[in-house]
Length: 276
Image 1 (cartoon, rainbow, N blue to C red):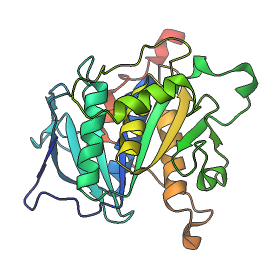
Image 2: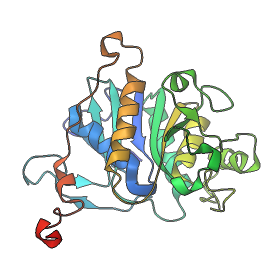
Image 3: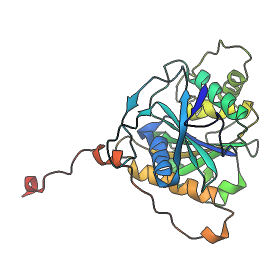
Image 4: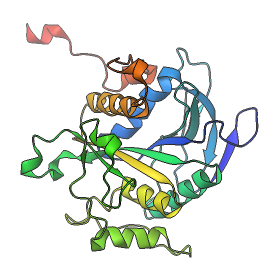
C-alpha cells in the first residue's frame, strides 16, 4: 500500500487516530464516512492498493461537476477532530481480504497511527432474540482482552456478544493476521458460527491488533435498503466517542451536511398523482 499526498510530503498530518469503513451490509460504514468527510474534512491524497478493485468517478462532495476525480481509496484529514479518514469506494478482490487488511495495518503502523476506528454494518438477521432490545450500535475494542472498553460503555454501547477472542474462529483469524508469510488463506468460511469472524471488519481488527495498534470497531446492526438512517446513527456515535472528554460539547448535537452524491442514490420521489 502506497500513499500519494496531494501537493506535499507522503505522511499523515493527523496520525493519532485513523477512521475507516469496512465493506458491510448496506455500505453503512462507507455512508457514515461520507458524512464525516462532508462536514469538515479535506482530501489529503490517495492510496494505491493492489487488492482493491480500481474505480473512478466524479467528485462526490463538490457542488458542481468540476472534474475532481474520486478513486477507490482516498485519504482525508479533519483538523477539527484531529483525525485521518480513509474512504473505500470499491470492493476488495475476492480471496484477498486478509492481505488487504494486513496492508492497511502495516501502513497505519508506519504512519505512526495510535488508534484505528473501524465503522461497519452487521446483518440484523444475525441478532439473537434476546438482543432485540439491545442498542443497534455495538462495539469491539482492544482496550481489554474480552473486547470491552469503558469509553464505549459510557456511551451506552454494548460489546458484541458474539465476540469471543478465545474461540477457535477468532483464534484462527488472529493466527492468520500474525502469519509471517504471504500465503494467507485469505478468507474465513462464512458459516453461521463463523459469520462475525468472516466479516471484513474482523480481518481489519485482527491485523491492526497484530501490529500493536489500538482498535475500536463501531458496529451497527442493519439490513439492506435505505441505510441513510444507519449512517447517521454511526456518525453520531463516532462524534460522541471522539469528543467524549470535551465538556464544551456535552449535550451538543452535530449538524451533518448531506453529500451531493446522495441526492441520486434512490432516484426521485414517487409521483403523488399515482395515489389520487
